[in-house]
Image (tube, rainbow, N blue to C red; front, side):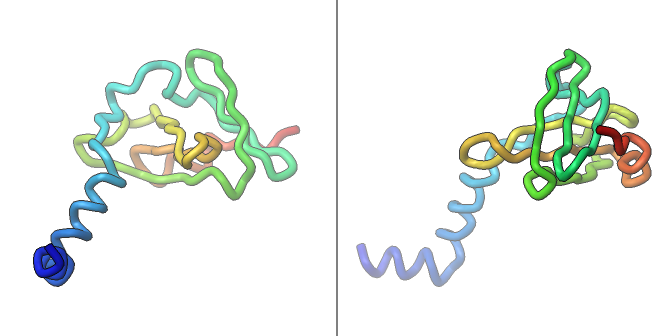
Length: 111
């Protein structure tokens, strides 16, 4: 067994398997339900408030929200960013945009 584990580590197979489990299945963000489609993002005193098209607001501390882009075939539709929960407790999140130019215009600085 020890030789087998050594082989896996040396060949990189163990790391690839671990990464595959961590990353999970790739989502098709263009098919996201309304409770994940972002309608508005506001920022106030270190807190982002993300409101979905369903109307559900979720607050994230600024350090716990990441902005990403995915213009590929599995990404969101142009102009329709998607929010996904992350972290072991769901206390972090990603907002994924189609293109970088969509990020700043959507975020409003208001308290």
